[in-house]
Image 1 (cartoon, rainbow, N blue to C red):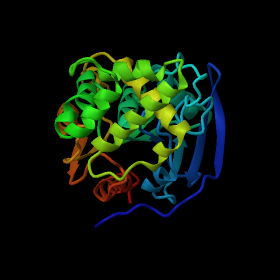
Image 2 (cartoon, rainbow, N blue to C red; image 1 turned 90 degrees about the vertical axis):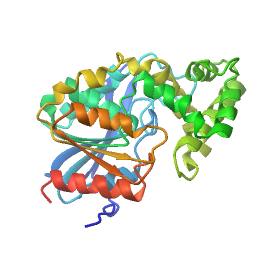
Image 3 (cartoon, one colour; image 1 turned 180 degrees about the vertical axis):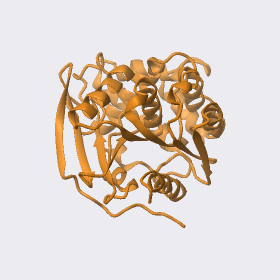
Amino acid sequence: MKSGLFPETEPFEAGHLDVGDGNLVYWEICGNPEGKPAVVVHGGPGSGCTPMHRRFFDPTRYRIVLFDQRGAGRSTPHVGDFATSLEHNTTDHLVRDMEALRSHLGIDRWLLFGSSWGSTLALVYGQRHPERVSEIVLVAVTTTDREEIHWLYHGAGRIFPEAWERFHAGAGASGRDEDLVGAYYRLLNSPVPGVREQAAAEWCRWEDAVVSGAEPNTRYGDLRFRMGFARLVTHYFHHGAWLEPRQIISDVHRLHDIPAVLIHGRLDNSAPLSNAEELASAWPDSELVVVDGGHLASEPAMIEAAVNATNRFCGK
């Protein structure tokens, strides 16, 4: 049976949680106040949640929690403003924010739903707080290992050579093997506004190119979003998400007995299927679902698999 997105739904509760360091994290709750708790961990880093994220869950059965990771979306301060420091914005901070939000909302255990970078953050949170996780659903699986980062900004250039040449030139790189993430990270932290804005435009142009079959992301047309997204992605990836090499694979035993569905597109050029296959192989409690799609959770095949998974975990 094919499953599409559930009808649009609006939050019945929302707010900003003070998580320290001057950061207020935006959160909202939709669906059934007495339903099964689930939390959406958005991608990027820096994409923020959208109304579509609410629609992966049956609103009559789930208490659906969405939040914008610090510095992104409706959280404040926003890193699209250059005056906003990234000093207190790391994977450890985001994990602590999630746990603070769970406690604030009085939730004992919740289902984790993450896509792309959100799958990495969900996995790290789950490995540190397995007692707080009921199930996990991941779409476009990533572990943000340095090999994955290198593929996305170097290896994928073999598939999109013209776009990569422009991306490489935009970094001002002197050689083909130069660290392009590091180069853009430096440009995006330039004191010259024009330099930052041009770097953000080139970064987002490559992001559009490498997502297989995608229409241009209209949110990149907004300067504040574009700057915030590019700053956060390069900040996290330049630092390897503050994870040890192969950390998530090495620590997958901490997720023992947590049921999971891993959904990945066989046409995903930005995160090769082999990454998801390796994670599934190391995690006996997980099921890998391979679909005819790319990287975006909004693609029909990804939606069908994700909704099937959330329906299964609520007993529908």
